[in-house]
Image 1 (cartoon, rainbow, N blue to C red):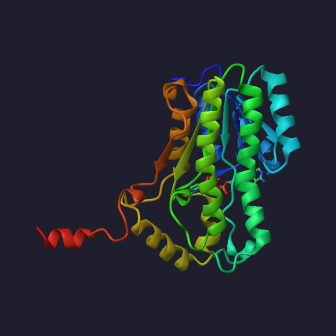
Image 2: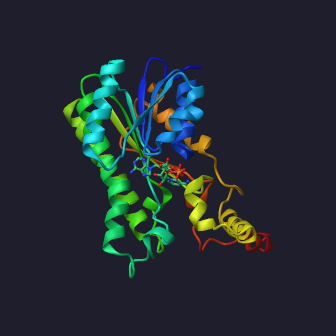
Image 3: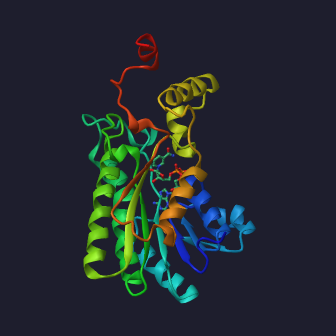
Length: 272
Ligand SMILES: NC(=O)c1ccc[n+]([C@@H]2O[C@H](COP(=O)([O-])OP(=O)(O)OC[C@H]3O[C@@H](n4cnc5c(N)ncnc54)[C@H](O)[C@@H]3O)[C@@H](O)[C@H]2O)c1
């Protein structure tokens, strides 16, 4: 199909998970992809099989990394059309300590916001600088957790909520300036990637039980895949979404379609 033919994309956090699936799909759709991450070993791994993907080291918290990456991409390819601000962390308790509002340390709160949110601010800043002449599409990775409260992931959900609002600001700013840069946020939930590892634990039986609990809360009855998200990002990156900016798109197997107090299927059946 080559839905991204002739376009150049920068994807952050592309070594694995959703970022890697998106990089591969973009390449299959004719895009030249700059896959960035801090896990540099990936350049000798799966990326080797994709001639349209090049690796670039980009720590999303480092402003000079951003400037160098955009500058290199424009010198190499002439333009950058798509930025997928995808890199992020949950802030697992083993590394960052408890994450509820009562016990979260200021240091972990700041680190999680720096990686998840400052990165999006920096990415948008340099995308605007390098895309404002020819236009482009910015896709910011938020989460279902940016739309609802998450008591045990307070810094994560706060950072993702801020991304949702900042996306709208960037979208409106670019529209007002006549830059032809669109900016949208995506809000997945329950996508099977390594980000869940700390929560699932290493004990096989415990992992199975936790997975069953997660799946019980998903109306479609299974977790999503990184490719499910990649197809949504593909739509936002392509010209097919040219009238869409400032939007927030949810991809969650139906989780947010209802609420915890909704009548269960059993009760509905009893009611006939
Ligand atoms: N998996 C889900 O259920 C889910 C749901 C909603 C949102 N998300 C979001 O999707 C994004 C991707 O997560 P994933 O599920 O693929 O997890 P993942 O852990 O597989 O991938 C995250 C990637 O981000 C990279 N990264 C972390 N810190 C970085 C930094 N400072 N600079 C550059 N790269 C860095 C990691 O190296 C890794 O490659 C995250 O922002 C996450 O919050 C995931």
